[in-house]
Amino acid sequence: MELIRLNNINVLYQNTCALKDINMVIYKGDYINITGPNGGGKTTLLKIIIGMVKPFSGHIYFSEQLKIGYVPQHTVFDRSFPIKAVDVVMMGMLNKPKKIFHEFTKEEIKEAEKTMDQLGILSIKNAQISSLSGGQLQKVLFCRAVLTNPNILVLDEPASNLDFESRGLMNAYLDDISKKVTIVKVSHEEKVSTLVNKIVYVSQSLKVENRG
Ligand SMILES: Nc1ncnc2c1ncn2[C@@H]1O[C@H](COP(=O)(O)OP(=O)(O)O)[C@@H](O)[C@H]1O
Ligand SMILES: [Mg+2]
Image (cartoon, rainbow, N blue to C red):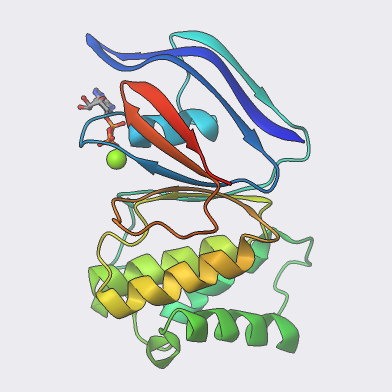
């Protein structure tokens, strides 16, 4: 089933051509890894996919039941806001129909803590976000996106600030949920998961390598 289709997409920023004549289809169940040089247009491609950037020309078709989880490359985030890591993660659960001033259920809290544990950040759950390292914040925002229960997860270099071990945890987590969630991820890792079914190389134009 097609989730998103890009037909002959061109993106211009003032006088920079960021993407040129892009054609791409994202199917349900895809696990896509996007690579390419700095400035090649990877972030722009993700923004096109989630409808955040309008193309100069071309057409984008979205399937109706799309629920997108997005983790941007650079998060504009007021870090001085007094809030704990776990509360940022729990925001992921807020999209479900709820009464105002509700409390989270035990199950929801358990699920959030389990996800934080899988990413190795349970021990910092009560830390203020202002005190987190870049990598810890990246993992917190990743957990939040995952807990929105999206059917497509769009990740822009989610492991860029992560150490070796954390990368392993995140990749294992993604491999695990890739059976249920469509994943589109930008990363520069040399070893791409064997479960990834498409490798996309973006440098203004696009090359797709289908695997298995
Ligand atoms: N908001 C913007 N305004 C002007 N130029 C931009 C903007 N965003 C990106 N660009 C330019 O578009 C090109 C692609 O950028 P980007 O999609 O961020 O690449 P990547 O994520 O692959 O590094 C670069 O040349 C970049 O400088
Ligand atoms: Mg980028």
